Image (cartoon, rainbow, N blue to C red; front, side, top):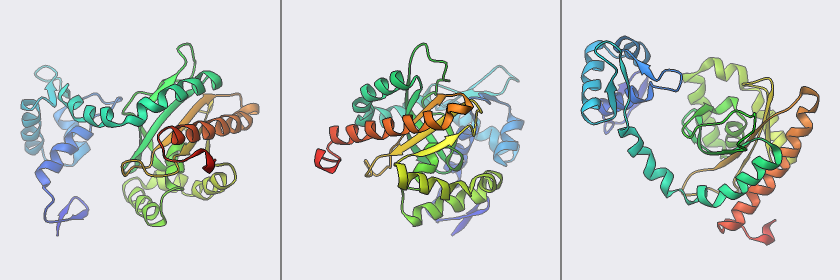
Length: 266
């Protein structure tokens, strides 16, 4: 075993490759352009290593230079990495009509999500054209422990998976863990009683979100559907329950459509 940062890694782990991926993961919608110095700070690598890896990523088409001193930004090559995954997920094509109908009915945003380490990632999202609910871009993410979809995932996987994920969150983002760890028991109760999780105003005081996981793994992943909508505070819980039951029914229809369950299971 060797060490990468604070973690022990297997001898087959290629640190140079990991560092290159770490460079790419440093970019976000809020930080679309990063200087060499910012990458040093975000990754913990020295300046020479960052410069060498950035040069290689530019040559491969995954990064581009923004002027001589303007820093780096992601290039179109990164799209070729994600497209085969998205294109192969037939569930997106099957689910979209139901997602569209629910978004129209609830005047909200309906999304399809999967877990990525300590985050929940949005793989598809639908909303009414004239909706005031914020749109969600494919590839955007929220903390696993601080989102309706993430909490639904945590409360639906095995105890071992949940413990491993929570330990990772505790180590990587202790502030997020401390602020949200007590929500897990609440979410377990919500899932047992209603079949969906509720997150009221964690990221926006005007919004409420509900989430429902599929009943089985699909290609080794637990897919979670999410519905987010705007609601006055006095109506927030009622709207959440309405959306939650509608989302639960939608997920059951999708499961039947792909052969994951039969009508008799309903």
